[in-house]
Image 1 (cartoon, rainbow, N blue to C red):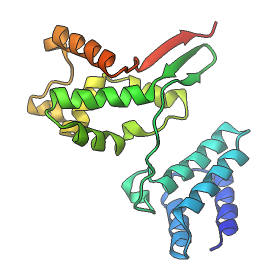
Image 2 (image 1 turned 90 degrees about the horizontal axis):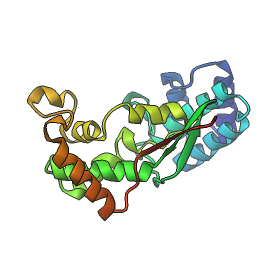
Image 3 (image 1 turned 60 degrees about the vertical axis):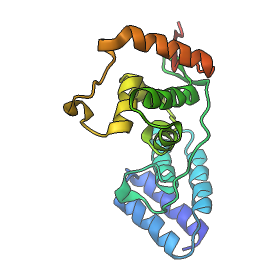
Length: 206
């Protein structure tokens, strides 16, 4: 399968429907097995995102293909073992009709790493590896993505990565209510020490 053949096949799939599927994964696997490179497939997926930039629904399907190519997908859909690790940034802005949020993604992830070292007994290196390979390091594209991050406490996300699913059933607290004064004082000091911004800054557009 040539690069352009892959492009046209995927373009047709986007126009037909859902692309976060085993069928799309199989198409990409066929391309890989014919000698196709992950980096080239990534460039083609970016091109598809640009092609469908005028249609939000179709563009999101193109992004689903991009996620499969770069490894940000369920294990069953993965084609290449190498997962793309993105450089995280602060100051990401997302809006709907009435409100907006500045999401400081780098500071968000760094703060969670420090929670893991202080409250889960992990080294910074261990925490860094867990965070950068987790869903928290996924670069959001929409306000909904940011809202998913913000609907839980940073402390919860840190404990989830450190201890795994259902960690609270093993007596590990999912919040800091029992030690809030200590935690909030620690959090303020850590943000100042490492120059970390607040994760979310909300504002009204009206």
